[in-house]
Amino acid sequence: MEWFSSSGYWLGRLIFQRGLAALYLVAFAGAALQFRALIGERGMLPVPRYLAGVPWRRAPTLFRAHYSDRFFACCAWGGAALSAALAAGLADLVPLGAAMALWVVPWVLYLSIVNVGQTWYAFGWESLLLEAGFLAVFLGNDRVAPPLLVLLLLRWVLFRVEFGAGLIKMRGDACWRKLTCLYYHHETQPMPGPLSWFFHWLPRPLHRVEAGANHVTQLVVPVLLFTPQPVATGAACLMILTQLWLVLSGNFAWLNWITILLAVTAVDFSPLRTPPSTSGAPLWYEVLVIALTVFVLARSYQPARNLLSPRQAMNRTYDPLHLVNAYGAFGSVGRIRHEIVVEGTADPVPREDATWLAYEFRGKPGDPRHWPHQFAPYHLRLDWLMWFAAISPAYAGSWFGGLMERLLTGDRDTLRLLRRSPFPPESPPLYVRARLYRYRFTTWSELRDTGSCWDRTYIREFLGPTHLVASRGQSR
Picture 1 (cartoon, rainbow, N blue to C red):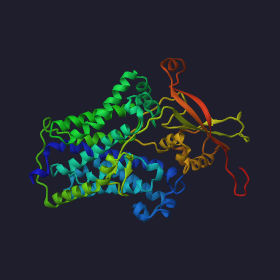
Picture 2 (picture 1 turned 90 degrees about the horizontal axis):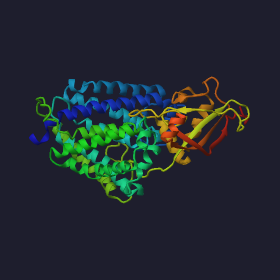
Picture 3 (picture 1 turned 90 degrees about the vertical axis):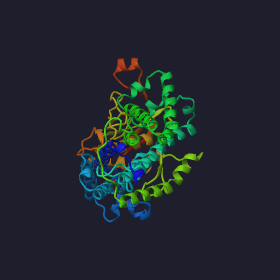
Picture 4 (picture 1 turned 135 degrees about the vertical axis):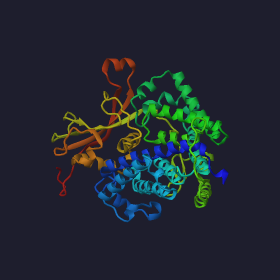
């Protein structure tokens, strides 16, 4: 069928598939390197305990059949290896059916991880990776031209990401309507990047222009994705530029990168490069794509209804397979940044004048002189949850005690998640505590005089001095 495909999008498909495979690689590698302390058999939120209390229909996963840390590591590193092969073009070297099967494997593996990840994996970009990864199964390879229906479904994903984020801002914090949210956002965002300090100190009129441009990009431009070319290409390019601006200004895991890849699929590259010749799509493939389209449109009812609802939910999935989801970000923007600083002491009495030494995290602010680094698209899960915990202790209820216990025992897997531990694993502290500070970016003159990008002020105790208690009730 002539309407079924268009060779003009072959380069966009190539970039999307290779880029998506690279993001899969980052996600799998992050899971393999961090899971033992977070959800491993001896982790803060162990997978076996979670699965024992959750029915299959709520969390379908390969780990229902078997769980061990070794098996999880095999799945994660196996997914990383296959993703690397897909990024190198493996799917274009095999027949169409085999290529589709290859794309199914990382989707199943990562779905299995997300569905046991609990609060560590409760982020919108997990669902976004799974939704895009599911559609990638049906996008074909070099043997056939890209199917237009799947390309349109990818635009529908992009529309929900951008339009959902735009609506939730307009319905949420009044500072978005007043164009003042970016007075604070670069300083209070979850994990600032190396340029965030400079973005924060841009002139306030420019911040207002940023906010206004954001509304245009998220509320007007997404509609143009469904218009004829070259308008759709122009809309996609505007989205790409906006997302690159966000990449420079902060660390949001792979959210911005996958949004860029989705936008690339709407770009018609045919004026720039002649598409290669492809054979016609087989009938079974056309039937599968049409069935997929009908299925996704049927499943889109709740996400579409959510967009229209005055009680719009942010980053919500409507089924355990994460097939069609609702997205959105930063409906509210904090004016003040709070950070939890975790400290330990080897002194036998945890007095205020004891020698308290701070643990330093990889991404979240700690030492005021330590300049933020770029980690995205890699996701530092503990650092992100520490940001949420500083907003409210309710976010820390299920895992924070486990973190403190592992610091007191010198757990090596936990210490590997940190940038620096003042206590080696063989000599853990006798006591740990957590203190809440207010952080703000220093001014230009303060940076010049002190060399510190942050200034912090003590607020209160988050958790008082805590130690291990032996089974007979005696302190260690």
